[in-house]
Each structure stands twice: as C-alpha cells, then as structure tokens.
Image (cartoon, rainbow, N blue to C red; front, side):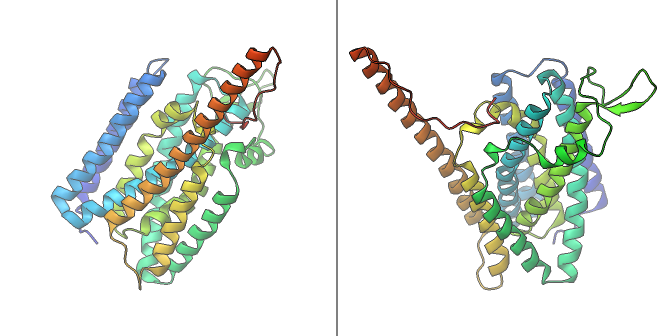
Length: 333
C-alpha cells in the first residue's frame, strides 16, 4: 500500500471541496442546464479524473497509476446506475429541473462522506481478515445477477423514497428550494426536496455496498480507491443532465453493468490463482460498457428505420398501419 502523508490527504480534500464549490457556483440558477453545457462539463470532470490519475502515476509510479485508472473506470461505469436512480426519484416526486441541482449537489457531498466510511472500514477488514475478500466477491456476484435480471430503466418508484414517505411528515407541495417548512398550525414538515435528497443518500449507501468492493478488486490502497471514487462521483450531476433524455433508451446497459460487477466479483474470488493486470481490467470494463451501449443504439436505430418504412408503405397504399412496438420506460425524460 502507498505511504500517503497527512498533508497529501489535506491537499486532496481541499481540491475536492474546491471543485464542489466550482460546481455549485457555476450552475446556480438556470446556467449550465443545456445539453451542450452538460456535454462540456462531463468532459471537464472526466478530464479532471484522468488528470489526477496522471498525477498519481507521476508521483507514485506506474503500478499505482494503472490501479487508479482501473478503479476510476469501474466507479465511473457503475455511476451510470446512479443516473437511473436520479431519474426515478425526480420523476416520481415531480421535482422541477431548477431545484434538482441543489439536491444533486448535496447528494454528491453526502456520497463523498459515506464512501470514505465504507472504504476505510473495508480496507481495515481486508487487512485483518483475508476471507472478507470472498465475502466482497460474493456480494458482487449476487448483485451482478440482480442487475442482470432487473432492468433499472423500468422502475416506477424508488423503494427508499417509498419507505421514507411512510415514516416522515411530508407535504406534497414544493416551497421553492426549501427542504423543511412550517405549516400554518406551526408543525414542521419535509418537502419533496428533502425526500428526494434522503432517497438519493440511502440509495447511494446501498450502491456503495456494490461499488466499493468492486474497486477493491483492482487495488486495496485506500488513497487510490477513495480518490477514484471521489472523481467518479464529482461528475454525476453533469452526467445526469447529459443522459437524462437518453439513458432510458439504453435497454442493454444493465447487462453491461452486470458484466462489470460479475468481472469484479470473479476477480476478487480468483485473485489467489488468477491475477488480472489493471490495464486488462480497464479494457474488459470498456468493452462491456461500450458494447452494451452500442447494441442498445443499434437496435434503437433498426426499430426507428423499420417504423419509418412502415409509415412510408402506409402512405403509399393509403392504408394506415399501426406503428411498430416501442419500448416504454418510466424514466425517459
């Protein structure tokens, strides 16, 4: 494991907090909500993550740089699952777009704190008990099977939000960007924004049970794991705005995510007998995610072409024909 001085952690956290402030200030109000801005900012955050990886490689060596890159790609891939959750929660609660940024900002800040807790506890457990690696691997394999069977794009309600709604005094009305309001009778109640924020945090805790062990499959260094997690999480807001209108159409994406989880689980279980280099892990993850996205877009284009041909044929003979089957998802924006 890397010997990281305390001052390096201090500087790292200062950089992360500075980037969070930049994200908050740069997108206050309606600025930065366009698709073009989302593309630009997604590129900015990915570049920041890769630039930090280059810094890790330069300071700590090639092996550390490769491990960071592999962990970053794993976390960035699995963060796509978070986008599905954002869509489901915001859609089910009817959160207006102008209020979503504050919820996402606070949700990301909370995720940084909870991920740190999971990572340091996980590292301590692995250092003391080697068999914990098999537990982590088993968790990843079980989660991979669940993700493979259950397409997150067809969820109509978030379970964490439903659980909270039955246990908290909540008003169904929005009050600007307030999370708690006082009613005329003096009673304090939560607004749907607070419900959305707590739903994001609880769901991310559940996701951390999957994504953190996945990062441990390529390295057990806490600095590399946490820094890769942090930079993957920082770009979630921009990634959400970028994919909000299209992620529901990526029907095969969950198969790619299941493949990433299964690969990480098998890697942890088989590590004593089969070592997979970090760069090979990056290549496998890229093939799984890019392949699932490509297959989704290819089928979508094929169906669109088929519908266009049917419409053209219908106009040619004067007979109105029904449109071809389309895949309806509850999370399409």
